[in-house]
Length: 195
Image 1 (cartoon, one colour):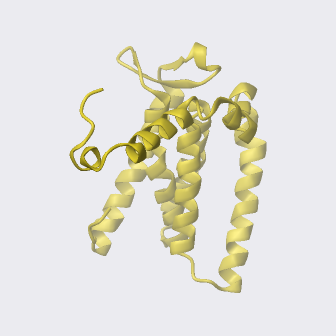
Image 2 (cartoon, helix red, strand yellow; image 1 turned 60 degrees about the horizontal axis):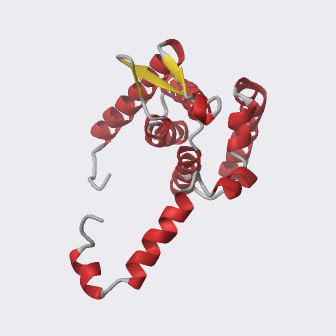
Image 3 (cartoon, one colour; image 1 turned 90 degrees about the vertical axis):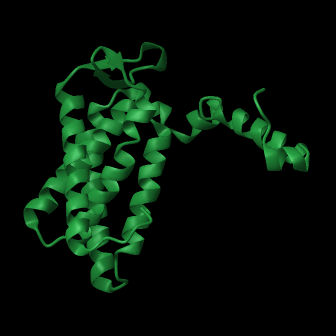
């Protein structure tokens, strides 16, 4: 992410990420999936009989979906734009099936960043983004969300996140922060060791 790429390398990198996204989506949607019973209807990819962690699996789309949005904004290749749009929609569907709130939030932030960084502020560009948002909202509400189990959709709501504290992660973060701030300077410099 910190390296500068020339135009040819950038196109190759984007094509590889779109390919990774498409292959992963095909494996997930047509291959072996496993439902995580204790976590409602969340599903994840099963590889060689081993169920992948849904948060880890869906984190792959934190890269592929923003790359797809970047291609939609910048590419002149119509076939690549269509492939990117399809990859983005199916990738979002996979994220919803996985039920990862962190991945969904990360994707939203990354997509907003990509749009802001790669859009010239003009009446035409704002109108185009508004039309694209309306189309994506329509596809999301009419095509993607009806295929997702209601308990997964309920899990993504703000009230659910507040109720369970982000699956207990908020208490872990608060404990970690209090340990850092209440600890000595030496522990901040040299670490806390195994506890």
